[in-house]
Picture 1 (cartoon, one colour):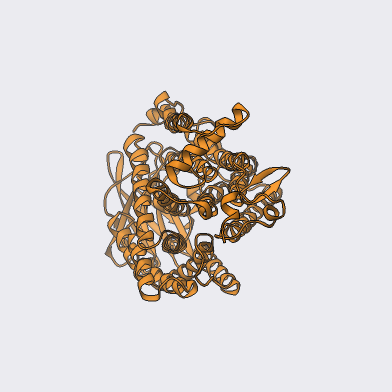
Picture 2 (picture 1 turned 60 degrees about the vertical axis):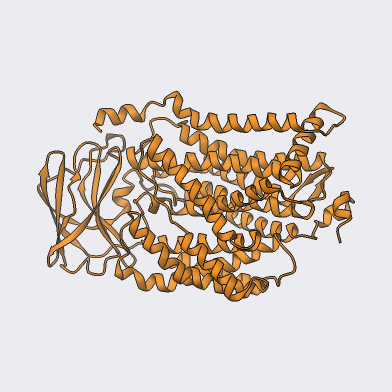
Length: 591
């Protein structure tokens, strides 16, 4: 795609692209009308009658109390809109660079999705109040399920990141990364909200008699939670990671162990496999939209099926009534056998084979992360069933420390003393890239070594193969003209480096062209110096506000998830609800 075509594409949005937002909203509205027509309840006022009829339809259709399904389905719709917008936006930035306008369809979809979480919590509380449901706590006559509060707070916290993100960009320039503090606050709110939406069904289980439709929605919630936790891997899925490569298997292990252990305990036998089935359907759907319909870079995704089978195997080996034993067994299997299967899929699906130099770290961090996440997943499972031995609080604390350690260890990004003679063998707008390293063995223990090109209308990667000691050539020619950006990427240990091959001039940010010279000597620099050319230094206050907002939000979200899991367990109703005498007839009759 030529420069003019790219600029034209970047500055215009057609009506059919806005349909990706309009269609889900229209389907949601149509479902509301259908539920309203099918309801048989009556109330004193039209507003109450509206919600009572929808609640009645949902309860008869799903077997779950109407408030929980009203909130959960609203939340799942919002999350679907948000995740389409997220993957669309990430693909856009990788393929084209900066946006030419703020309110793009992708940005609006993200905002609507996160705002929809607050709406979902409000809907659940409204229906619970009108139905006089025995849930959560009462505040001035309003009955608020714990899960509804958690979903709403997560949505509000994620939306609060928008002004912080604008402040961050004004201070430090535009950055195309998922892992800035403001982007992580946006991403984290949506990702963790999938767990909170799932807990809505747990909080409603005491009075529920799930139908086939209700059980299917339960599986959808589990698969959505797995999808949500997988979004943190986005930069790896799109092939432009800015952190150590070992994060990919670690993040896979975390998402798999936490979500699939929870799914097995919540859904019963084959629950982990069922959750993966919906996850795969959703990720294939997202890939078809982003790549098939929108013609952007393909977002690859982990398979998770080996991990699901590992969790099911753990249930056979260790049982599930003693949850700590089950979690430890499942975590160990996910972090070893499951992760081996995942790495095989990673190789086959185009990520590229894992470097042998990466395997020792994976062998340590993978099981550590998986066991920690599995124990936390088993802890959350107390919301879904009773009778099994709970996970001790001390074990949950140790699991949290193990998980934090596995995520913190690969965080450093350093630069080694490596230089290169980069030669180009041109063939039209492309070139074969030859790299002669100094020292010659600089890539011997590399965890990643390739030529990467992006923002020229797509993304391309060419592996480097050794043709002589310290001399390498790209597996295929790469683009070196127009708006493409091309670099040699080298990762080894905690060093994440790159050397430029070609960078176009960028007058908007005052960046000069790095021409595609026939031959150039270059020193490797931190990879973000090239991946994030738009960033620059700035005052410390915006960073302090951004990191503080992110930290407070994450701490509050995790605390609310824990409180919701405790109060949502069968047989448990919040103290405020009991003391206010709001137990409904079903709850009052329960032992």
